[in-house]
Length: 154
Figure: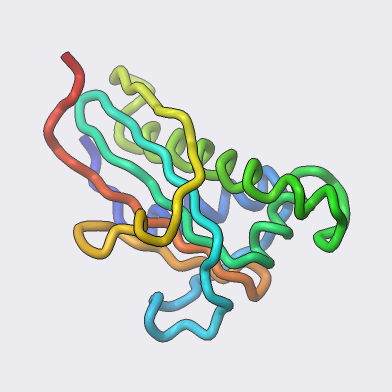
């Protein structure tokens, strides 16, 4: 399996944001020093196969509204964007786990991807995670990737 760094997670996230919802992004610093708005919305998804792991997204309210608006083609302040925010964040988690699995060799190895779900701040890994903080048009998106080497595939 390939090694993936926080820079690779950032790159995969930027590509996903640009291609799916036209959101431009740049490195956001570290979670401790960033001046970006606080993360208040969370989503998670798991995968398993030759190895297993999970991705947890932590995002600011503004990011979630911008994400949903980009996916729907409406204004971030619209009711439609606010109503679709959780679905949009779960879909981004789904896209990112697919990208991570592909980077890990998923084109040539069998992986099973779970369903994305909402979670709360207690689900954000405090250790053993590779973290990429993204400044997406002055809004916060944190991508936490936890990787376990043991196979769950039986």
